[in-house]
Image 1 (tube, rainbow, N blue to C red):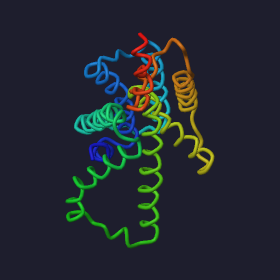
Image 2 (cartoon, rainbow, N blue to C red; image 1 turned 180 degrees about the horizontal axis):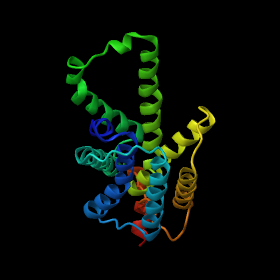
Image 3 (tube, rainbow, N blue to C red; image 1 turned 30 degrees about the vertical axis):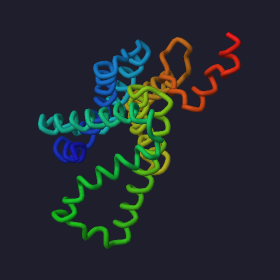
Length: 234
């Protein structure tokens, strides 16, 4: 809700940049304050580089209209996504990634259900509108968040949020290949910086702190205990 309101208020480019650019920073701070996991230098540098690349990539569209109400809404959207990611990383120790995503979106659907009674839904009766709704629901939301949830189970929340900055890069590449759009020099530089930052962050490193190891299952704990015969011999 905050993201779409921000885009409507301050424009697509600025609203998207503030929304997705603030999410990794919010996630890193939240993970540090709540869970005590201090961000690594590698994450800080890669995130700064990725945000800079996103700014150059989205800034090439031009027409930025700074509306502080819209900027605050975009910051709220980024913070909300950070809370979703950090909370999800903690809950994944008890539930499956698919189960967490289903629970989160079921709850969100219940909260947004009253808007159905005050919104104009006539566009859903048109074939094009129905196809757009199916695409947004099945691919842009369900599939993407299932993949995000499974990835979140393997990396830290701040890292997962930074890697989600691949979204504007993918959009730019699709616009160039599918729609024949041409990127300016600043956008090309931004795309290159964003690609380097994401590859750097995703590259495995023994020195970088990985995701915490999952807790052993009760069966594994039972196997690790000495048997009664071994206990008596001791």
